[in-house]
Length: 501
Image (cartoon, rainbow, N blue to C red; front, side, top):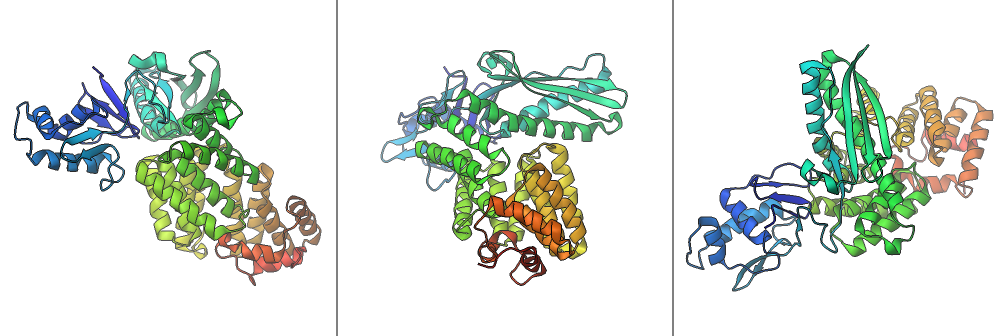
């Protein structure tokens, strides 16, 4: 008899009488709902009559047409089905009863064929040698919170000590007192070889222990999120033909988690599209392919931004329908909504993303940028600057940090704060020379009369995008909101020497 059943990203713990959603949170079930789900999940593909289900609920035989079972199933579907009106997990069999259609993954087994396997991670409780009661409690809190945070990592599955033998990676650490307060050493190792995959040190103050717990778990979770997809992508073959869904999704995110280039986005899109051909209900693949489209738009590589914004929005919306707890999907939807200038709805999407997963640094940054758009730049950039500081603290080596800095440069350029714009754009280019950042930096130099630097910077831009013209810039204005033809920014591009046609 299976002690637990995994299906559609959820885990049914039979002895513990609980159901966990894909983010690790418990789904509240009544006794009757739990009994029906257990009876069906233990017999996948087998039709159970209402009589059998009623017996499972009440322990007695009853009229096979007792409609209380239908009511229980209806309530249960609202809690576990992506679309209760079009159920995919609990199916009705006319004149016979109900059956459980999702192939379960029983406790220690691998996922069923066709389902996306996940990477098992074991979190070993952090130690606090000679730290006293306060640090011992902090170590317990960090370990517990981290297990919840890591459930949001793309492709990850958190396993307990009983399943330690299945773990592919082990996360462990220690908390000690230091001269300045507290020091946390954390690392992730390959369970098979013992080789380190990632390690980092975090310092904080004992006086602010609760804030430090939240901060350090977010930083560890985001670092592991970035490292895991790269580590997993190295395990798989180079040929997409031999990859399973997990391989394809992680290789797609490995490209997304690199500094933005048109080539990286195209390759990532190919992996996600292949994954969706194997399973068009993969929420992580849907969110990933959506992100490639919206990134093309915001990086000004899109030849048809309206179409790509629509594709991004559709993919993110579908991902949310499949997995309403996938923070990354809300982040992508927020970007698509902001590109459409639907800033209030975009703000709500980013807020949902960080509520589900506080360690998702890109959503933290975009939340602040969107607040700034709604507040109006004339009121200052405090919301964006505060959010950027949070995002950089969570993920100081975030692959898209250059994009955030570029965004701050453009924001200052739009309101005439040209000197500040030059500083932000130079910092962005120092990390990763995005072509639009170079173009706007050239415009900024031209606007302050520094013709030499304007021509030099525009020359770098032209080497990266030799066919770009002012007219082409106008056609892709979709990405940059208020930078309109005829504005001082466009005048700067013209002064810098960007050709008209």
